[in-house]
Length: 131
Image (cartoon, rainbow, N blue to C red; front, side, top):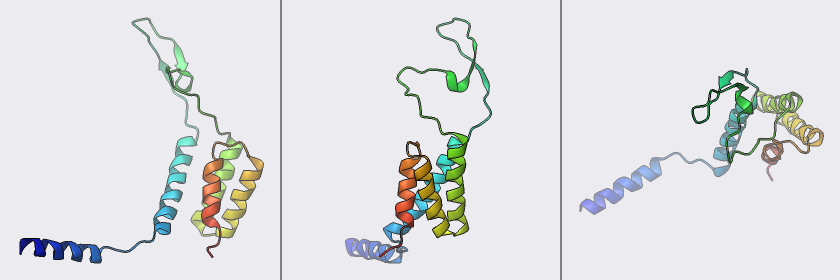
C-alpha cells in the first residue's frame, strides 16, 4: 500500500512539473552563457601585484603577466572584436533577431580567427528560422 501511494505521489509530481522543450532551455542557457563570457572578457583595470617564490622578495608585476606552470596563455580578444560581439548580443536582447543574425554573420566574416568564433556560430545556428 505504501509503495502504491509513493508511486501515485511521484506520478503526480511528474505530471505537475512544467513542460519545457529542449530548445527553450538551450536558448536561455546559450544567451546567458554568452553574456557571462562577455563580462569575463571585458578588460578590467589592471592591478599591481607582488609575487614571491620560495621566500625570495617578489617584484611588481601585472596580474596578467604572472606565469603559472602548466597554464596555457589565452588568446586575447581585442576591443573591436568584443564590441562587435556585444552589439550582436544587444540586438538579441532588443528582440531584433534578423539584425542579430546579420551582426553575428558580419562578426564571423571580420574575425575568422576569433576566440569567440565558436560562440558566434552557435548563436547564428540558434537564430536560423525553424523549419
